[in-house]
Image 1 (cartoon, helix red, strand yellow):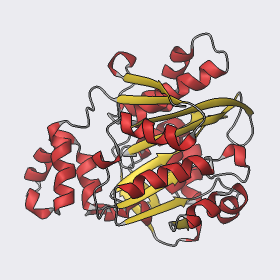
Image 2 (cartoon, helix red, strand yellow):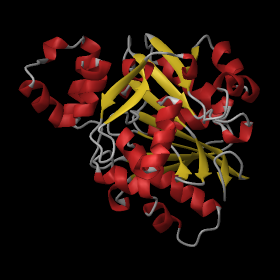
Image 3 (cartoon, one colour):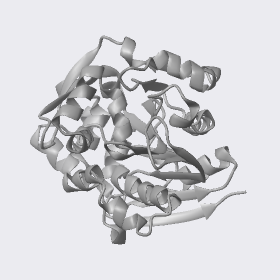
Length: 327
């Protein structure tokens, strides 16, 4: 595959019915794929992912495990994405060394346990920290390392990897992007950010979280070229297949390292990262007391730009939000 991307990820980049057309034009047939990969492709072609009417779950409560499980179940269940024998990359937000600024270990634990239920070949949790921070140290002091290793899952500090590849994008500013090869090898990418404010991106949710697959110099280049457009461009090729937002506690007013923490007591999930980030941003702005939280969310540049690139849907009338509460 071009750029070293796995076959299943190649299918997902083509997307839906376009995948069938793209495969035919490239001279490929379904026989080129394994049984598990064919199942993913056939689901995509059949429209089972409902990309035109994305579904976002918003589950409230205090039982983290129950909230995560219900949020994933509402949008179709983990089996719709994870096939036995697949390689799964879980990308939490562990860019900082303060617990309030990273994905909750309890949320990450619950996500891993749900994914394990689908019997994948391998689960990897990986991150490259914000410039100036040590990823391995972040893992240790925030409790992430204890949780992941306690579950017998491989934990990867991407900053210690020398395997970096260049991948072409379908973006406007980035013709190609340098990423850690581990991200290219995954069949399924799951983005698990904490819901936070961001001083430059306005919010950091599932799409911004994907910057953690970039080496440090590429992260810096995003800020030079234009952060908002680069976030959208990155997601044309590394669009998370599933995004689960930790809104148990939300960083409001300022961020991403320090802000005013408020109880959110929620987990959000979707297979459409644009729709999810829109609804999650609205939730954040509502917690801040914003008088027009949806309008404010609609004006977050990288969410708008991602929708323009076809990464997902940001039209509220087309997004189905299912709100539930668990005890």
